[in-house]
Length: 218
Ligand SMILES: [Zn+2]
Image 1 (cartoon, helix red, strand yellow):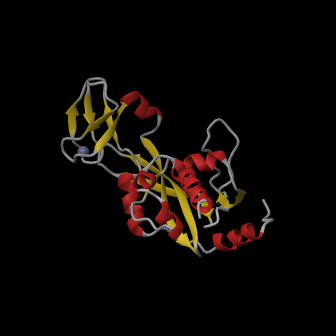
Image 2 (spheres, rainbow, N blue to C red):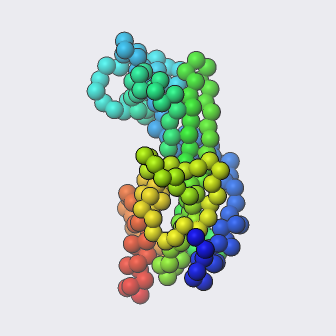
Image 3 (cartoon, protein in one colour):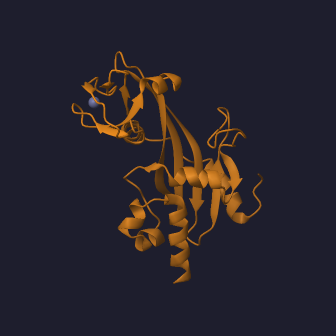
């Protein structure tokens, strides 16, 4: 969409100046933004592809702790593992301040695991950016969505451009992304958020709500 308001015009400009992700964030995301798998064969031998440890696990829990590397893993049956081609994905976000605005950038990370040699192939792409001003204005720049069966279906050659202000899919993804723990908040938010708010569910919609309350009680 074309920018109409002054705020949207400002965001379109700022959107072009956003920097690439730092290596620190990428390393964190590879470890923390995906719940890594424990792949269970029919005989209940369950393998952690992160460290190669094999254990016998016959329980019903969806999550299990690797006794070797101590990661909490999601149990995936061998059949399912085959059908998803040994690939999992996750969402993560960074919270930063650009030109006095609160910006949440949300990314998709995919990992393909190779059981034999513990190799992993990661790919990361940015899906959306929420731009929140101290007075509560919101603009979203994001990849376009592909209409289809899956909610989070984005073209591979898409560009991050202005997509409006409230879009449920982008809000949902941002709300459910794992947030990089070293975040930066604009003053109004850092004064208004409780610790619970910061780590609570519903990150993006929560930020908007808290800002709204802060603005109305001043
Ligand atoms: Zn392990």
